[in-house]
Length: 449
Image (cartoon, rainbow, N blue to C red; front, top):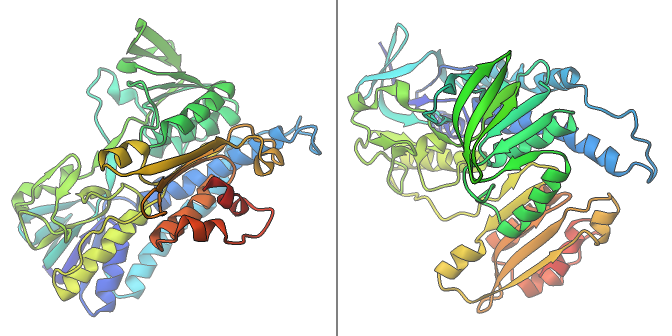
């Protein structure tokens, strides 16, 4: 029997933030993971994805600049070499992460964690007990409940492909599908996206999504909207995806079918009933302190908990910090309505922070909208990008930014300028008269207000 002050299940952003802070305060801490240490973002998500996306963005830039000072005829993506480069980031990470835990005095355990009663967890042959438990196990692809679902590949598997299949179909029109679709298309694959509703990338501004959708189709990617996959069959060494579409039943052939249709909290193995922990597909049910509503000795953070925060790495780290603060000093720190920017790392990237028009209207706010297609602006023309634009919502009463939505080169970086301005409550007038280095993308900000 091993006894601790805190057991943390998971080793991602939320888990690591809480574990290190509690250990630094003198608590005895154990951390458990059934997969290599490091969590989704570091090993199977954001980090490796962006290494590959970066290669796709570079090849796109070279092709855009063809006959503008560059000769792009020989430029291409070597998928195998890109994978080797990606693995220079992911392969060392689990050992490095585990060594960091152990160096700080955190006990590490490998295996599936399972509650046997409140406060007691089995991991293989080890039995652990603690005053508190943090559940931060992340998320997994949700079940589609269609015949042939076993033929689906996950995003994890896509990021480990040794070679790129000729024809790839993505089920779901969220950011994972669009990011991987752009990457695969730039690497030479024939790509199809099936999305069940009328709008893909539903969390982003619809006007900017329309622009990106046109760009996506120009890349040769087939985006089939109002198309719900109903069955996957194997045929002649390939796959046939049957779908219910606005034009009736259709079939799509592919060599690889990838799940991009949403994720749910990864809780199935934990036997939460034995610990009296309530949950649903959104995660552990928690209060404003991220404490379980049904077991006060259990907390939840990151994608494994229904926190009300975006399911993004920065938000997970923020949640882990809240859990640590409340464990160490009693429940006093609540989840705030923090600004968390979000980015679809397509080519070009699409980014957003704050409110969209619908949410601002629902709150009855008086606001003005400044929007423009910026393909003719210097910052887009100098890199030959014809897909760019913005939409900024400004409160009429306070002269503060309510939301910013960006599409185009460096949108993933520029969104942070808007996030900081909104967080610091900077007025539009002040931001408009701020002098930024020129020529940079930040120097465009004053013209967006």
